[in-house]
Amino acid sequence: MIHSGSCLCGNIKYEIKGNFENFFLCHCKSCRKDTGSVHASNLFSTTATLKWLKGEEKVKTYNHNNSGHIKSFCPNCSSALPNIQMDGKLLVVPAGSLDTDIEIVPTGHIYLNEKANWDHNLEKIPHYEDLPKE
Image 1 (cartoon, rainbow, N blue to C red):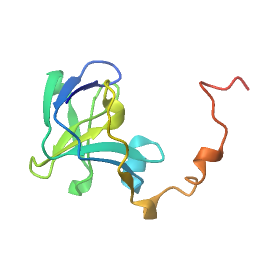
Image 2 (tube, helix red, strand yellow):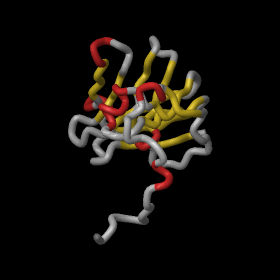
Image 3 (tube, helix red, strand yellow):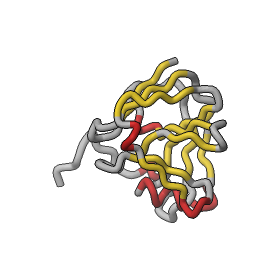
């Protein structure tokens, strides 16, 4: 399997060769903080390889207080990007950074003990195809 991805501004592009073993939706406070959303959506692989096609030298990586909560991102548009963790043993890819479709569905929600207090019954609120007019 080959997947391609990029940041929002297009300054950084990458390719992933291989398969993802897991796809977790993480509700921990750190993931909520760095995504600005209800959860992070990350793909994990111990066998796939990451190849930077454009802008590798621009990629910034932040390890929050050396805690292992690691985020790579584009310094221009702040889009989340893949990174290698656990001494090179784990590739973590933000699912939203991919430009290609994936076949894997989320494996599960994790860190539900830290989920936001407004993260309940979200499937029951109104749905819109784009921004509502009113």
